[in-house]
Image (cartoon, rainbow, N blue to C red; front, side, top):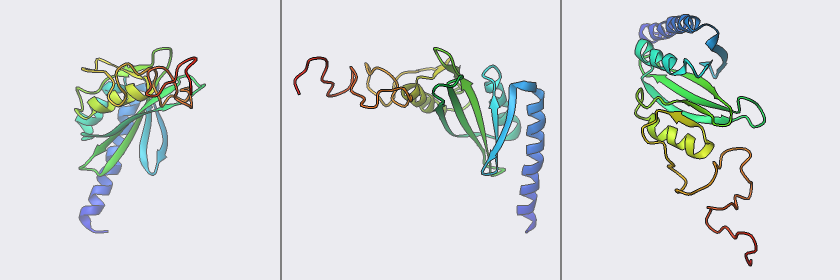
Length: 176
């Protein structure tokens, strides 16, 4: 292995050790998950998730929010997990952070003040899954139209989708 590539890989390994030390600072609020294709993954309590993400960005160079989405763990509690993927271009390394969101009104803190790309991604998660982002500057529908009822990527959303507010909704007693 040539010097430059070998140095980058050993730097990434030492940064992982430093990240694990950071995880230790948060105590039991962060859980280390099994690696997904070799990328470190964490589950962070909602109370410290934004601070953890901020520190990863500021102290370790994870300055790119590659994606943000949610998973509906229907029938489990917490029902939802918001998943963030952060990238360090310098280290050629990705991290995944999952943040549980449960209850009647699932919500996590917005990271739009940390990453501009989060604006539309958080709106999409709100629109499709119904997970609210506290302190989001403009949390409104982005894919579905205003007046649409429900969140279509929830596992309990009607399979036919023929609900009030959808185009072509026949309504009760309508002729076919």
